[in-house]
Length: 221
Picture 1 (cartoon, rainbow, N blue to C red):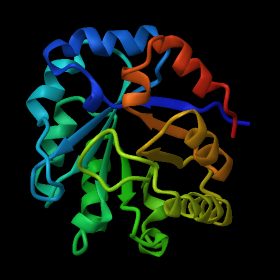
Picture 2 (picture 1 turned 90 degrees about the vertical axis):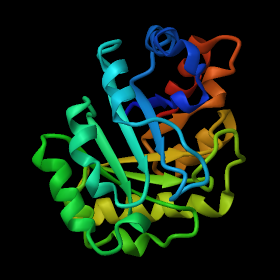
Picture 3 (picture 1 turned 60 degrees about the horizontal axis):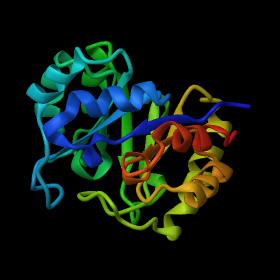
Picture 4 (picture 1 turned 45 degrees about the vertical axis):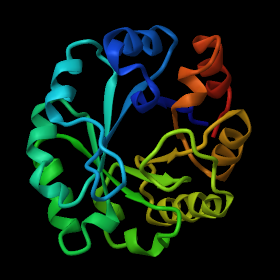
């Protein structure tokens, strides 16, 4: 059995007090810091870039789980690797012509590589690249904004990816789920095979952050 990795998204944090907000989740028992990078092109929102990641890197020793929701991510991999990312995840939909090259570049910097698919993207698009990655991020909302509701139709994709991983004997790969995570949807995601949960509002808006994270950690794959 694997313990569940909790990766609160700072998209739901108070950006005027990022240091305080990151230390809060660290003290509360989070494992990773999930950093949502949006460019206003791939998704209809703009968040932060590599300079901010570099600035907050010195705050904590937690792993930085950097999710690039941007077009042509290959152009920015070097910057985010240099900024201190532990994982860099790119969208298959943004790398239709150079996915292999992008994954290879991420790994050339000694950073773990992740691939992500939107709710409507079939799992089949990642089959040929699966052996190269360390993480598969399944979006259970349309990427771009926090606070959305979990899309149930995306749930079977988690099981599909878990079956692929088992078939190819790639048990080191994390299956991460992002979008609409709460006490109920987290159970569904873990039951389907996820072992890493991105939780934004559910963690950051909670009255007791530590208790909320602990409740998610009780789930076991």
